[in-house]
Image 1: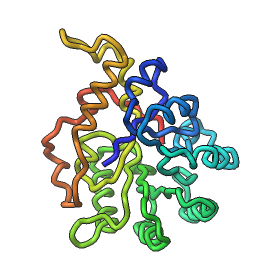
Image 2: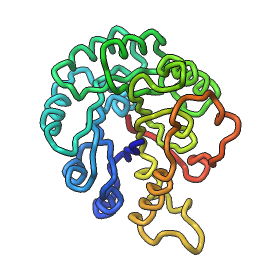
Image 3: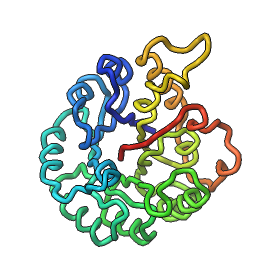
Image 4: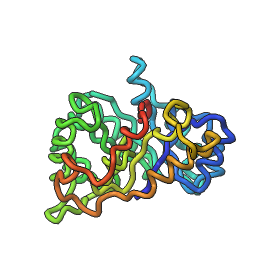
Amino acid sequence: MIHYHGIPITPEAAAAQILMRRHTMVSFAHPQQIELVADACQSFALDNGAFSAWRTGKPIVDWTAFYEWVKQWQQHPGFDWFLIPDVIDGIEAANDALVSSSAWSPYGVPVWHLHESLDRIERLIAWGFQRIAIGSSGMFAQIGTTAWWRRMAEAMTVFCDGQGRPRARLHGLRMLDPYVFASFPFASADSTNVARNIGLDGRWTGSYQPATKAGRGVVLADRIETVNSASRWRGLRYELESPLPLFSELFAEVEESA
């Protein structure tokens, strides 16, 4: 799977060292390092910034500027795809309308939100989308709760065929925790784990702690990238007992992107 690391990462010199030859998710809410990403990374995807805007209480209504931004970067050889604008906690009709408005580009990826119906998964697959992002929302907004795991299990029964193979390539939004993505047949996932944790000095102790933020970031990114996603859906075998410690138990994770 592809591990997309969220930005911004500061200082910028550290960002360049951490992201070199990796994959990055760039949010429209924080686009300031996209030039660096375009130069340093193997590939990058563009996040519409809806989650960040929703968290501030000022959801985006006019997506013109975002689409212009996408048009500017979608011809770059490192560009992978972009998240189609969505309404966090919105009704399905509103999100379906936004999907329709993105038909001008073949690179758009729709978001299925956990509070939405399983029928919408079928619609998105029937519409021919090769990649679908999964976003935690509504009563399932907190990743890792019992309700969240159960809802993800319900979704996997629709996303996957009878042998547990995904019917479309799946992307986990804010799910770049090894405990999480190792449980699902994801093609990719993202989070701001690295960006958020390299500055938490109190969490980095001991004789062998990295001396710089860049060193911390490399340690975190390498740790995440040593784990792959599941090859197919086999049920909730990781819910109660995991072969891996929760990443959030090792480092304090505070998510604000996508």
